[in-house]
Length: 111
Image (cartoon, rainbow, N blue to C red; front, side, top):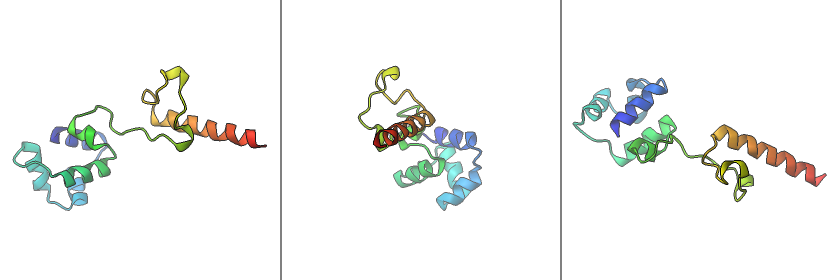
């Protein structure tokens, strides 16, 4: 888990000192996490996930998807025919584009 925290932070260009400041701990606490001397609390994992904008499940290694898709209300219950009926195969950008199209189509119908 800690390996994923630090690799994700590195990928996002977040310095250990910056993460420690956000969490309100000294950089030595993060060093202790890194070498396995101590493990972060659930609260700390939650705060790290917020700061790095990834899911807790991703940090824990339960999924390889960094953050879950946010499905706009207008698309809930709408099957996606060209993606096996699931949004999970799409990126968040693609889902957002589909939502914009759905809003546009709905507005045309009201005229």
